[in-house]
Length: 210
Image (cartoon, rainbow, N blue to C red; front, top):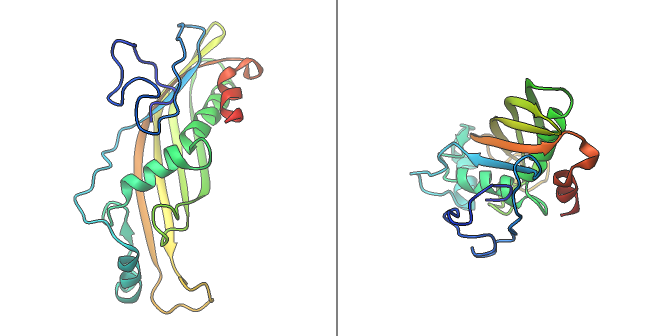
């Protein structure tokens, strides 16, 4: 969750220095202002839920008895798990790292300016619960790019929206209950400094090599 973040060695994040936390794969890279690339997302929505976490049985019960009422990730206690699965654990690198690359490429298309970047893709959330399977995450980044010599500084905020349908759980083409929508949203702040020339960017090469 600290990937791409710039910190002082004397003032590390709560998880400690790179590699200290359990299962942390981060490595410390010296930072030189105006030369070193970085890109960091930070959740700005509280992901904590005061609701009990739904089990697979709860999804089934709502399918049979909920009359198709839509439910939110916050209501079913899955918001944190879905958001963090998307951000850090999807694929090899996590969607936050890929999104950072995409936003950087969009920023490189012009000089200093305000810009937006829209995205949408289907992801496998079965590791959170079998009931989820594939779900869609779409959203928009709204921010600014400032050209400073050979570097571009990017700052802005991203809104994410999750959409899924619980339906035909037997995968037989026949509904034995009433399908219902599962939805949710969260936000994150994004800060980055990248080389203006895409072909020179170690940031992009690092993302693609993982």
